[in-house]
Picture (cartoon, rainbow, N blue to C red):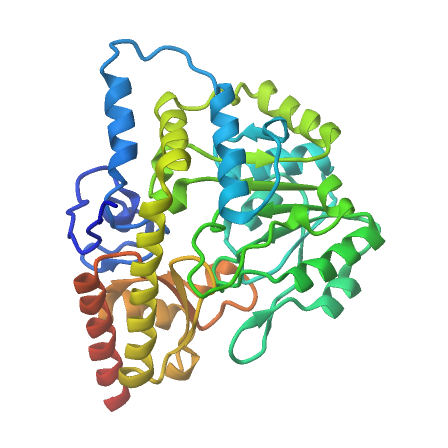
Amino acid sequence: MKKYNFDKIIDRKNTDCIKYDATEQFWGVKDAMPLWVADMDFETPDFIIDAIKKRLEHPVLGYTYKNKNHFESISNWLKKRHDFEVAPEHISGSPGVVAGLNLAIREFTEPGDEVIVQSPVYFPFFHVIKENQREIVYNPLKNSGNKFEMDFEDLTSKITPKTKMILLCNPHNPVGRAWSKEELSQLDRIAQKHNLMVVSDEIHADILVNDKAYTPYASISDYAAQNSIIFGAPSKTFNIPGLATSFMIAKNPEIKKRYDHQLHTLHLQKGNILGNIALTAAYEKGENWLDQLLDYLKENIDYSIDFFNKEIPQIKVYRPEASFLLWLDARALGMDNEELKDFFFNKAGVLLNPGYTFGPGGEGFMRMNIALPKKELEKALKKIKKAVDKHMKE
């Protein structure tokens, strides 16, 4: 069994990389360590690179399509890795998860309809609702002290006749919850009662880092299976987000037909020829690599949490159940949103995602990506400690 090296430090600068090359464009910062964009600073696995190289031995990169093996590899992976039965005919491509959310909102809601989000949540959720002239209904998560939970009482109170859809993040970005079967069942009962469609972003499903299972929303009940759409991808799992490898699952044939109509109308169904190759290679050969990645991520998470607890107790960390993202509660530093951003970006020199960008409930928090070599992680944490120590003395 091949052993992979996640300690290898790779210079990603000048590769048209958003995380490293676009920080000044996005944030006006040049020199801060970038721990914001949710991709990993590890090498894309060799079996994916090799598959792409092999395809590039052929001199023609013509029009492509997603063949039978493409969908079967997704189906087989979901069954093998998560015991989730999905027939290949239930799967369609998507140019990306966010693009897929847009297609779903356009097809299954009307302008002026209400769409529920559970903030703080991945910020493109807000954009796909607003930019399609739908109304956002915030159902903020409850902070129980050690973890975040869904607020079902608040959810129920906010549903109106105009409410048509819930955008679910499962596992949740940024708070790191892998929602339990019981929690999703309660959400499903509310959706049934009010005849709501659930559209679920499940892109972090493979990144399980706390001995918690991933429960696909569509597996909860017959209603959930027939009234939901799931989006997934190998992009987070295998560090290939630049290859457009996302997919959509709809067990209801009519829902899939309508989604496919949107996909075909915009001529987005074919995908990227190298992305298609990468997806198949990832799902057919990726288990050993992923198991080693998860072990490394768990060590980074343990190290980070221990460091914060001992060296920077002013910042509370929520242990993620899934994803390589830490949700940091920095409210004890006594700063407003802009002060907190300036503190991390310019005084600590570490670029994290400001919590307020994730919507109500994110104020005073920061999101930190720990998917990087241990030495680089140590460097970032020491920079934060130095800045906090100085702040506390002032």
